[in-house]
Structure formats: structure tokens, C-alpha cells
Length: 168
Image (cartoon, rainbow, N blue to C red; front, side, top):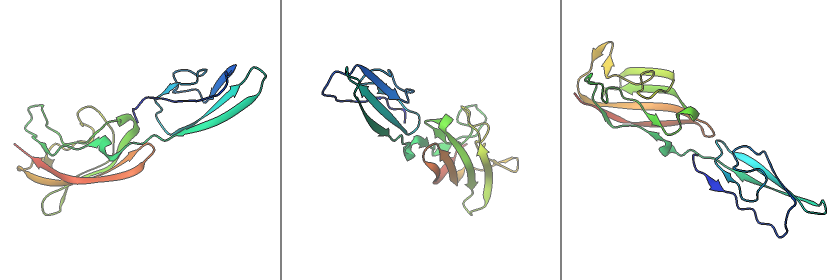
């Protein structure tokens, strides 16, 4: 996802008409080598018509993938209210195509200290990020674990786990 490329059509005659179907996400709908940047997997059908009215068609399937590296989770944060790095939250390369389903944080003994479901996205994680507190009290510096279930268009549900260091 996010990559543009040229579709290389090869023919052994001069077509009178060139028709791509569907024509969206293509730089041109009547050329042999359009550039595409699809947002989801798609199959394009190319139909060529020669000067005698004979038609030939072929299709190309483009599979759009979002790899696991499309989510980035920091390993430290410092909720000291200096307005810099005060919340812990994952960042997505394509937030408009992804969403948090479950976001849970645990202390070293396995007690759940934060939980959020169906989080929305914004630039600083205010809607779903953890502020380093538990029951309205700031927690001590330390290492905490997280588990995040997220959904990405075209890939379904995925899980990521790890640890986060809270600094003061």
C-alpha cells in the first residue's frame, strides 16, 4: 500500500481503442502503460480494439498488502506533562485504513492497568493513548507490557505485543 507503479501492457499491433475497467486509481484510462496507486486489492480488465473492430481482453490482479511493519509502537515514553511524549500509543502508516480493536497494558505482576476498545486515531493519541496512570494516580517508572489487537483493511485482525518503559 502506498506504492505507485506503471502497468506494463505489451501488444503486437496498434490498438484503435484502449479501455481499462475500472478506470479509477489509474493515471489514464486510454493508454497502454498507466500508473496506478490502488488503495485496496483490485483486478483491472484491459480491452483493446483494432482498426477492424476485433477485440482482445486480458486482466491483471493487483494485491495490495500492508505489512506488519505498518504499525510502529514506541518502547519508552515520559508522562511528565511537558507536552512531549506524554502518551503511549501506536502509530499507523495508514491510519485511515486501520483501527485499534483492543489496547491493553499490564504491570509486571500481570494486573491490567489500562484497557481501551475500538480506539479512534488522532495525531497525539488522546482518544486511545495511555497517559501512564492507573485509577487517576501516576504510576512509578518501570517496564509495562502491552497487547494490541488492530484491524487493517485487506489483512483483517492482527495482534502485536511488547513492552513499554515509563520514564519520569
